[in-house]
Image (cartoon, rainbow, N blue to C red):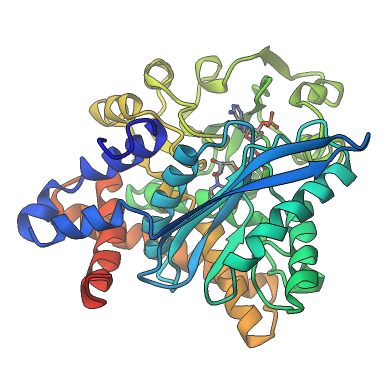
Length: 432
Ligand code: NDP
């Protein structure tokens, strides 16, 4: 707190982890100083990103890459382009990424990056020029065995393509320095779907463990980007009833559940037209739009899956969910629930699937994309999906095992399981 007094998101993420570590530090006091080391990134890069708009005016944004921890492998974590991006936001995401990547069982360190650039309303050419300028600085800091960024909010297949093209020009090197690439040029099957599918596989593990299933369950989803879209798709595959989606302008409620045609309409609005979720009303006569609101207070559901951004589910939202009979919250976005909300959910016997475990499917398939790039091979959809399901099963099992061993909840179990592997590796590698 003394070192980073102006980084509220980062402090929130660190505190969330520290509050679950008491039993670990009691059993293994030598790990306290390892945690201290782990809270300080190995390297933080901040750089200028100048770019030209379509009228020829120069704009300047700020670029970031925080290379947080390389105990388990090359730094790995996405790039976020959103006006709310600050060093604090990138550090919170990078910190979480260390534990998440550890849980996947793949050899991945933790990192995160991005820019305060706002992609909304920009032309395709402006996006391309920004991505090229961003990579013109970033390229010297990344590499297939050093640091492998991916997408996040505001960075999807289009942006990864523009950045990959620029990297190749600058480095004269075709290697897997980004994941989330197009399938024709080194991407992995199931990568676009992986985070959303993984969230639903993880929810299924929680329910199965309690002798229950997703069949017929009403689910509130927030967001309508990459993660939300494929969360809804997999919910439909498994017989659940997704009743909401949203964006930063408001939420859409479908009382009887989104259909596949409805989801296709959302995908067209968000991915092709790059428009607002309200446009969904043109495609559905049954939908209701609530301006400026998140879905939580406007639904009656069994399960909630926040899939938009950090701190989008607060204490009031948690109260509304408990009051409507919601029994499970699974975090699809990173740190979507405030600490007060998580506390309230636990107090009221709502099962809670924390982001680090629940949304690790995205980075896991990014790890598989790296493996395929190293092999110069591409696996089938079925093979990647099978591996993803296995990884999500493992993450649930290892989080639950740590939860039982240390007498905590699933959130604590995920933090502990993720931490112990990194901490032991750091100890083995000496005071570096
Ligand atoms: P997208 O950019 O594809 O979608 C983001 C969605 O969230 C959009 O609907 C967006 O609305 C909404 N949103 C973003 N910021 C805000 C805000 N401040 N207030 C309200 N709504 C907001 O991003 P992703 O789907 O990739 O990411 C969603 C979440 O999942 C993030 O927390 C991300 O870190 C996390 N995540 C993503 C992974 C991935 O593989 N992509 C992997 C693991 C986690 P609008 O369109 O109006 O901006």
